Image (cartoon, rainbow, N blue to C red; front, side, top):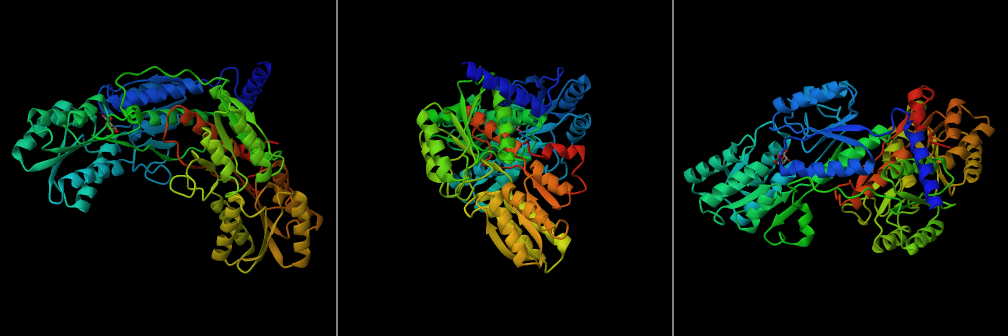
Length: 632
Ligand code: T6T
């Protein structure tokens, strides 16, 4: 117990170091949550996820509900929240793609970071689209959802059938996309869309419109209702007209009522979104962002569960039905939740920094971290460590950086099969595509885009050296996902930019080997003018060899990993470029992925790329850049 308390205290110290907590700011942020409208079972269910994550992460939520799904109603609510001056962040479902932009821009300009859930503003591409200030758009792929709905109508009605779309109002990102998706399916499968009505999010309107359309068009045999209220109205109109079963209906949103329509045969398909996942991920990731762990994907699609007559009473499916009241929140995690963390190797400034992120997230969540360090980057060393952790029988989750794409699979599979969810950070197993690739059991792969990193490194050598220059790659060992990809990325840049890769050496993650190999290569090939070292130890060795040979400045060097030593080489001119990964973000996000899964969230992305900071002689002493240097 005393040991656990000591570990917890240490974790809190690490957390406060990580986030610079002061007496006034204890990390209990105030996050405003403004749904699209309420009451609405969809947003009530989202609120369950929001509140669960707030309880887990130790932050406060101020929820304010617009009584109408209307920007004229939600904008003043958001303006008033901004005016309070005590809101640290805003999570909201904007009512209109264009009209909601100004008020959210105002919040952002007042220093309040914004995540949109369910709906988006602009074109929804926050990476390089029309509006880029929101941190992320977390919600369903609505075009896909509309397509699924109308494809199912086509399958039961056949080519040439006439269908009707019951929609909300043009301008709402979600329902606009559902309409588009349905029309695309109609075009692909030969359905005719006879009419589209807009109900202003009122079930009564939807009911009257649907009744009128069915009367005027007795040949309409299919209906798609794009959200909860359209669905309610359409369902009632069909029931009243005695057309249950005669008209096929696909609905969006798994409210209790809509599931009732499925059970009694009024409708044939109900598409459940995952609003609770949207709320949970938004709060957990926003809290991480405020703590300084900022690699949040700009887009997180949350997926669907499709209900039909066959699966509607399946006990597994029950959790996808929306809540009608904010149900009880599960108790916070506590120290009995054991999160095992096995880095690739330690000591290594990269994994020490990752451990800072792991401990910061676990301290917020109240979990215990059991960190066990392989002394070599070698599956023969890490596999017995993982086996012993599995054998303990008390590990709830595993976050690890596998040493080999293929050889690490069996031991991780064993952990997974014994009931321990596995998430890989930094490196991956199989081909790294955990959605449809060779290995799909890990929850996620959180790490840099290493092909891109290698490409950046060797493009910078090309910029400095020009076409025809000869370069040398100092790598670790074939089979490691990250460094294999960096080598590939560098070779692609060399091919694109006309560099010649004279030789590649593998140092087995030993700086001494790297130093000897580099010294020998430089002696044998005095025409080499560029070196790319793919990780910390190769970088250390290559840096030392260049310094010893008195070649600082004469040979251009690009290094991976921003250890203090490598940054020192940049400062003294031995190297020209240091690529910093974001290992603390990897650790933080990895733990959040595990916490989310433990809460039943199924939408944590299978891949979270964590980005880079590229150090050069120009920015190395910039105070803003200092936080990207690895912890020693
Ligand atoms: O379908 C959801 C949501 O996705 C949409 O943006 C608006 O309508 C709902 O809230 C359901 O009423």
